Image (cartoon, rainbow over all chains, first blue to last red; front, side, top):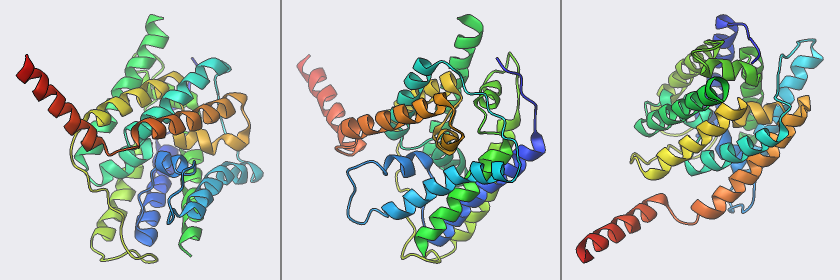
Length: 142
Length: 157
């Protein structure tokens, strides 16, 4: 496991920007900022009034942001596991689970909790507990 | 106009992920590891995001319509069904195995780590598979059918 530094202020500020993104999307467009929904509905089939352009632009902005930071000389720290089989399995589970559960960390975790939605509170507690249990098993039991 | 807002929102979201450190799966995994190298940063990210989003939702709740579009698309469901437990449990296992949830994984694509690319391809495959299986009919219909089957099996037996 890689040790990381506790960054309370940067994390609070970054979190604030994520919240601002959700606020902008609901106030201007009347939409909830759920990444699994936005990404999932980029895949076909597309209904007629799908707003596909908007969702594609959201993803372009999302991918462009780290590049802009790097172009400005900001060093992004990232340790991605070299175990590609494990990441493929994890990706499948995350993709499948977020569609079945109608949301991920952003839709349920950020937007849902901010709206005090009981459904999102349940979902958030379940995915947090499952993730904590998984890390415990893989790091301390296996 | 409204689709440009999506682009701005994506940039804001991605910038938030960069500044908060959440693009680093190691940081996420350390948050989830209370008994090991615990890093509480993710709680601050979630806290900051929820506070600012809540203010936005409050202002939105007082308006009759959004600034640029015709109506608000508020989530309407309030029932707790099996899908709401099974989906997040599966998602949580994948999140705990990798340290990636959809936002940070997609935002990291252009940083070109092989693991990120593999994860995102699998993410899309998992989403497509789930949509084929569960999105055919509303979950409430499935739950109702289950209830009927259960009642029938009790009656028969």
